Image 1: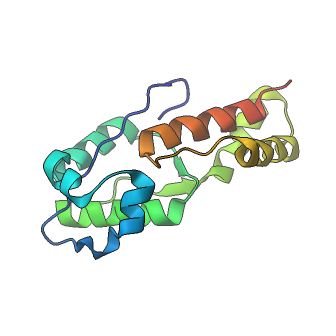
Image 2 (image 1 turned 90 degrees about the horizontal axis):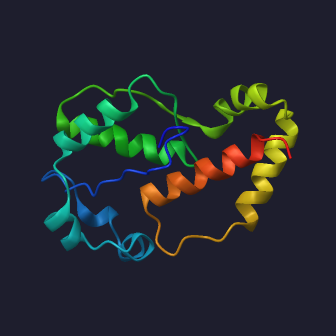
Length: 147
């Protein structure tokens, strides 16, 4: 999701033939609500996912609340697609100074508000990228807006 764009986009990724599904354990399937069979049946080819990521995110700072994990999966996707990694995924703290500078809220106040909002917001039953991105962006933006 991009700031100002409140329409999350997400895709299921069809597991590449070289990927072991050992990593998609029963816990992963339960957390995400996605079975390996569903990934194979409804997933999008890695090349098409790569092209969509490049089209949607080139030129933007890409952030995540779990950047190491997400970067690892992006690297794997690019490796099997035979394409270069188009961007590095950053931690949320990278964008907070720029956001607070626009609103006049201090960084300390924004971080404090964000942490409180993260702890007190209801957790999603299913961990899905689009819904998670939407929730994360809303919490972040709400945290840097003056009361």
